[in-house]
Length: 98
Image (tube, rainbow, N blue to C red; front, side, top):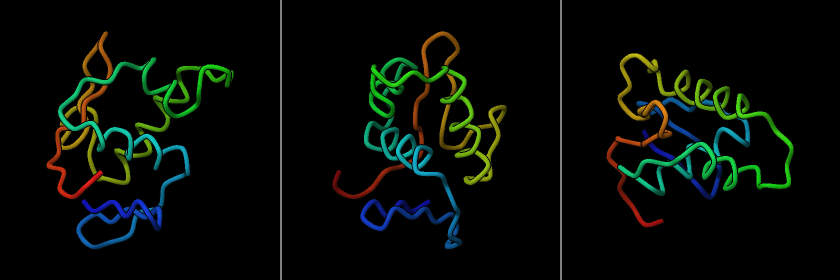
């Protein structure tokens, strides 16, 4: 996958995939912290902020949207692992400067 942070575009196998602004932000944050377990709370704070009243299901919906765009499922993740009771981890290879 290729994430163009400046243009806010995602490419999977050379094909552009559309993401909402929040989903792009979640994927970007995950990719900036590869192989690090990120708690739901940390992701919610980083993307929505503590003062933004949003249900935790909003994060689940964004992760599902990202997985669809990446062509993967939660059962056999290639890029985003779910660690029950802990959070999420980006396990794909990341190249380039943050």
